[in-house]
Image 1: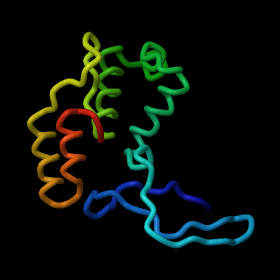
Image 2: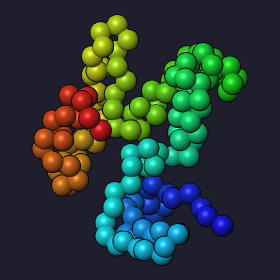
Image 3: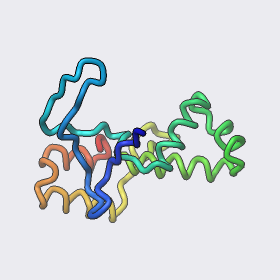
Length: 131
């Protein structure tokens, strides 16, 4: 039986990384430190929402119908996933990122202080340009 790869540590909640990959066909294996894709680090609920959103061709009205929720709730869930990916939702009227929340700003600065991200990455995140 194969299990889905967890993206976050069940103990501390930090990102996990893969240390070994193997080919089921020829038996070749590769060892190292491999980063999981950003989408793989989402919670199972967020991954399910993204799959439904894609199957619905990016139409939130279809997502709301399938999930049996209101359009504002579907939109709020999409924004939750966007934030979980490290972005801020785009303002619908301007096409520019919305200002980040004080909590998000504090987290970015804490990540920078802890050495988890570079100063360039922190600047991008503070501008809402990257995760």
